[in-house]
Image (cartoon, rainbow, N blue to C red; front, side, top):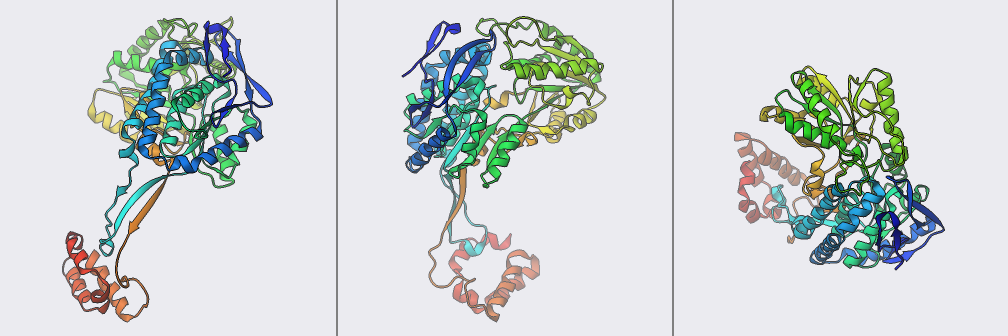
Length: 556
């Protein structure tokens, strides 16, 4: 085992410096450099595969699939539980590595990366049989009443998991865990900006005891990822990232009709009613916008406030934002660290600068600070307009634009007037208003008096509409993305079924009578029953005992 020594951490992390394929380290022809965004220091260099190495990972996953797909659910549960215990044992090291490579404060790394990952593993380890056991489904068609029918949930094959740098533990663990829980094997490509965290996760999977080839972690440059997407042995692709890259992934997969599950960008709105609790709402908006330095697809990036509460809410938000401590993520009292990449900081700076030039005002922040590190201060913007880029396009940074509205009607209309639809939130003390907001806000997730946090609930589905992506992850509906939903039915009839050849006049009369007997009402229904009884097909081919045993279906 090679070790990466991280001088900035003053400790040694024991994890591979190269891809893990079939539980063995595999080196490639090039390297990737990991950077500490708080100090702009090189943390480590790791070996990167090329397209040939990527295909080797698919080979390993493909070879492992037959055996793993037949592994009993109970054994999969044990391995998921084992993975949970390994992550628990290394939670301190993982959180420090997230702080070093992603710039996330230590406390926040535990809160938004380690906790959701552990909860997802715990949930699957405890509930997997209940979620994936075949589901008996009695037929509704009375002529099939004697069938034994069910839905089976069977694995797809090799699943590719491509994850971003903003949640380098939580997102990969959730998606890999669900994929292997369903009996799939995985090729996992972590983001280049947090490749060390990805390799550390790979080592936790190996330590947990998963068989060789079940999960293969590949260090790849973006251009070499196409080798996986184009491989006919990959049955599905899970991608989390930007809209533009997600569209390219979908195009490449579509060329061979490979299904994709995409979790893309967001421009999430928070709509604040005049009756909202001021203190709770202000704290919730600040945390929902600034946690992870705003680098969350479901961050609050637009706030619409009914006018009676606008001024006091803005004042309280500014007070709270002004108390946030921005600094080295390894300091125990840091609230907000640096942004993870200089490129993303430039996106944020450009959007804010454009807004300021067009008349917006920054009540806090609004500038790139001098010195080392990719820091950007928490920024509250007012006097914004819907045509500003900061109100239209994903910012993915610590910026909170706030706009007054005359009514909930106006707020809902503005919130929904976006090409994105990942999550949204409503803030009110009225259950009636809450019900309306949950129904009318256009998003994949809507929460009342909270934002972002449903990602940490393992039964809550996650995903969006419009350009925020397609498909769902998390919970039962996330599992359905990773299985072949197979309908199975058993019939042990003797003789010919009513619909078999030959077609003749009696069979035609039988079908005409059955239509009215089953679907008409009143006297017409009764005439249908009498007509049925006059056909030879009914007496010769229909299982009368089965029909009588399900008589309620006859009078529906």
